[in-house]
Length: 70
Image (tube, rainbow, N blue to C red; front, side, top):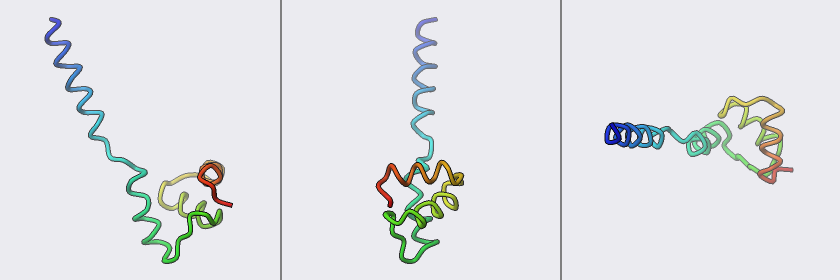
């Protein structure tokens, strides 16, 4: 029984690591949508976040501020 639990635990851990990384795909979306994308420009950062990450104005504004956009 313990061996079965160990095997199931290993499969569940392996399944979690195969999720796609949303953050890694974002720069491609931003570059496609904005030819001269500047992540330090808060307006561009918020617009890209809303378009590429499907965020809201509040969450994207907070995220961009934390990343250093002004």
